[in-house]
Image 1 (cartoon, one colour):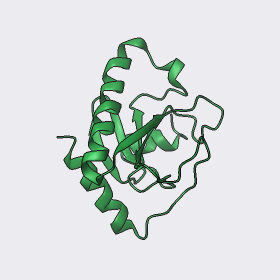
Image 2 (cartoon, rainbow, N blue to C red; image 1 turned 120 degrees about the horizontal axis):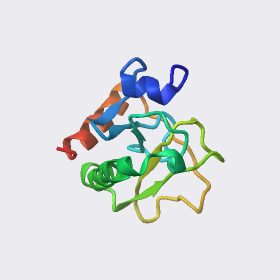
Image 3 (cartoon, rainbow, N blue to C red; image 1 turned 90 degrees about the vertical axis):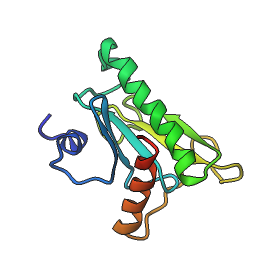
Length: 137
């Protein structure tokens, strides 16, 4: 879709801090992360929400999400991850995306209030992307 930000990232015409670029989708750092290392995973085709993703693409897409969810704690020393997606409500971009957020006990995340943090620089964001990407093989 020509005017979709995430389609532009998938196509490589919009810059992003890419963590993984696979046939099943693309994972990149959220520019307004809940915590540093917060990754968004999107399918390659433009679909607005999870219910629009063709059934034959579900296994590959969620295997990619699962791989990212395994890589984030290993790469960042987190204890786990919070994995979620919104459908329409609270969905900032109208392209299916799954959040993979690094979590550590006592990190301050409470319920669905997501405080946002920023990277100190593009270099810091790039370093996070590389660290996570190394664990995706």
